[in-house]
Length: 71
Image 1 (cartoon, rainbow, N blue to C red):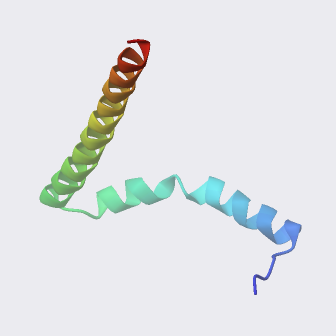
Image 2: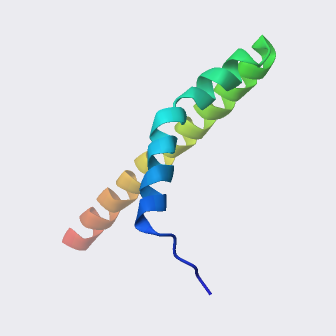
């Protein structure tokens, strides 16, 4: 059974997230060693590259399907 929070509580929590959520990454980076920051950046870079590759492959597949349908 799902319990719903009152709207005023949701607004309060949303405000907290907007106010303090931006500090999380900076604080985490400040507490990391250079190696840990490098590993985190590499992981993010790899994920972005996989996302770009998946998008490119999807575009190429849709182009192939469109060309095949024209025949």
